[in-house]
Length: 454
Image (cartoon, rainbow, N blue to C red; front, side, top):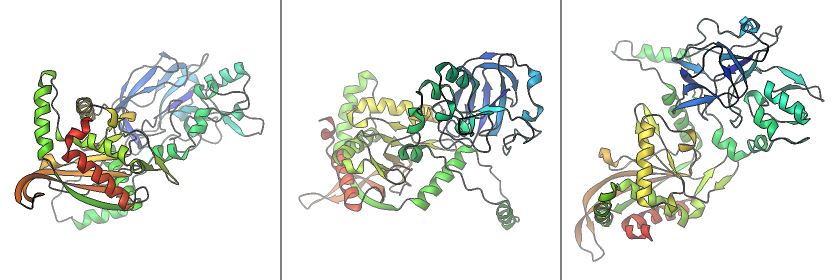
């Protein structure tokens, strides 16, 4: 039977995407791992790889189509000996299926459903709706869903498919599951996906859609006013869902502190003169990243994330930094920031920020981390409270450095450059005294910048 290729979930929050470009055409032979298409998610433009081998029998969704829901059939793959005549007419999308609210095609009960896949072998089970793959029966009589290539490899290795847990959509067994399995065992990759930590990080968050009646009621409220109705794109829906989840489920508390920047600004100026020949220019934000990374090492209990029914304490300091882009924001992650030099952090941050604005980041570059930084000081904001990005334990909101009169250690009034910061903390992960110690360590590093080079 022909195999339906489904719109994949290429990020944990993806619900729909744009089929930007097909990299194959009808009649092309493809193998597992070949690139099929470029897909724009709510975060980035990514390449989609084939899981099975075969011939592209029919392309169902034209390139450039926006709002294609995850698990919607986008093409049909034929096995050896099959032709386009074998493609069931029921697999073709009905008129209007490609619009932003199209539902995946559902096989009829009286017909043999087409096989389907949408994620690669390592992706979490993100697919929605009913089973879309044909199945054989296992020893227990339960239906077993597997790709043709997986069935072939299983037969060669003498494996019982009913004893293998699939990692594809709807639990479908794919090539990688069979290759990593031993007789009577489930693949390690499938077991790993059951870990609470993975579930906490990968679980998609559905944006709560306003009922049509409520939307219409609000429109009527402003019927006598001039307004423009702005349709939400994937990124805005994801941001709305994540922030709603954060404020409804995370018990935030806030710690505030003023930090003197004069020593840091002087030290930064000296370093930038020395690094000028290498084309490196350090920003205040680079120092904040480094100070935060070192503080997480000094207070290891605060280097943690919430994982549903437990707390995960991380060893490295993986620091996320909010980057404003058109229509939303990204939080690329600088991994192992505690062991990186300031110039290395600066170079990587510039690269991540540029690719974030171009929507060219890979998922591993904006997922993870335990701590985030949001800096609005460059916009003249003195102070603000940031919303925690789940599953992070805390986020540091950074305001502008402003000259203010302060009382020095000798009791005299002097003018100093002062930056106001607010640490938003998840009380499930970090208690008040622990959060205060973390913020103290950040402040001491910034007020004594030479410490960051030790």
